[in-house]
Image (cartoon, rainbow, N blue to C red; front, side, top):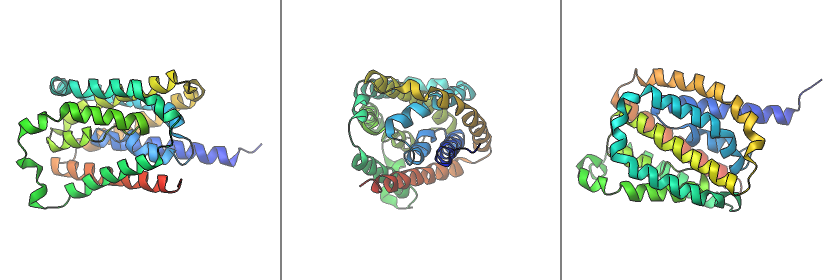
Length: 257
């Protein structure tokens, strides 16, 4: 008895995507959907990708929240952003079931990559340390709103909220806890939204359950790595990860045109 080569190839792709994304998430505090989604889109449509990633992301974020629970106070500053983005995605994520979003996904990939590349260029004009904290705090709710809208259409809701977190130069462990909460609630909102729109999320429940195992192992390895690197090294890895995720998203959607 031989296995279906197409099924085997797809399963290996899914395991690879979840493992890579979870390791990056453990190391950087984010990255599972950012890294895994562009890879998974090679073998399944976007709503199915959301359904498969639902449980690994939920469990990985709960693990991340627990590992960084001492930093819970950071939520006091950013709860409006989390609330706004989650509510928008809960209502708007039904759109991804019916809309072709390849062009929008490429735009998001381009914006993510551009931000990452510019952040690594040592140009004085791009030095975000000169921006007053009061001005940045005024962007918390608008960033959550934009993240919610873009997430509703593409499932990629880290932009521009993640960029705001990085610009505010949060402590890496504060960032890890904050992203654990932000990303987990956001993905729950997406899953509930497409389920309410009629997408059969239950069909992917078994596969989603199986992906919890590589997600937890890879995230633990990434977390151990994060605790051994400097703040400068951490930020460089963040920008490199963003650039790779954005470019991959662009390439994937160019193939669909």
